[in-house]
Image (cartoon, rainbow, N blue to C red; front, side, top):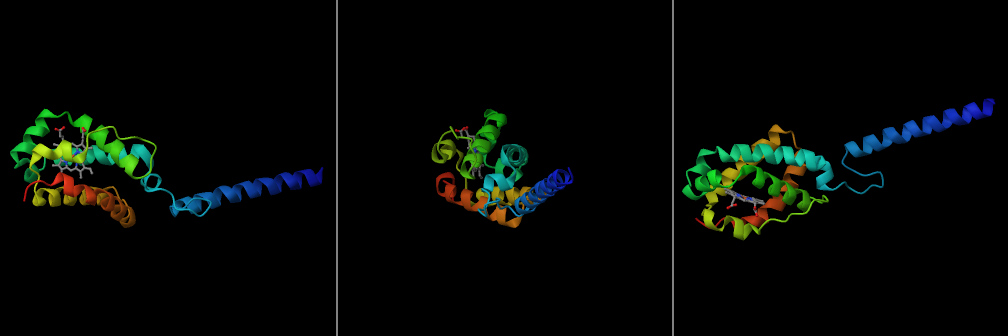
Length: 160
Ligand code: HEM
């Protein structure tokens, strides 16, 4: 009887220890097997990414630097922002290693008529960086996100 109780106690203690260890390791952004969690997982998955994208589009759509460009301003009123939020969320989820799949147009096609300049790109990056700081996204994850976005600039910026 005593042995049974002791075994049960030992099993509970072991279980508690493994739960605590998994939480500690996850907090570092690593998986239990030592592999680093995907950027998608470290950002908190689709709900967190959708929340950041939601706020990003809200801020960009009222940005004076961007709206000084008539093509951007026109698209802002013509294109439903819920659609852009949905597609951008899917794109970021896919690019960061999540299960969501992006079914939208290429970056070249969707931005071709917007005459986006280098200064407007820089403004978008500034607003995005500020937003990530506001959401307390760690520097490492911010760097990884910008590294994914950076290569799209060649297709998006079409004006000087
Ligand atoms: C200054 C920078 C940017 C501006 C002003 C901008 C603006 C816009 C606008 C106005 C649209 C709607 C176009 C339309 O449907 O006719 C759009 C679509 C979209 N943008 Fe951007 N964008 C910028 C940068 C980016 C970046 C860096 C990404 C991602 C890497 C991105 C991803 C998308 C996606 C996924 C769509 C939806 C495409 C579709 O519906 O097929 N954009 N953007």
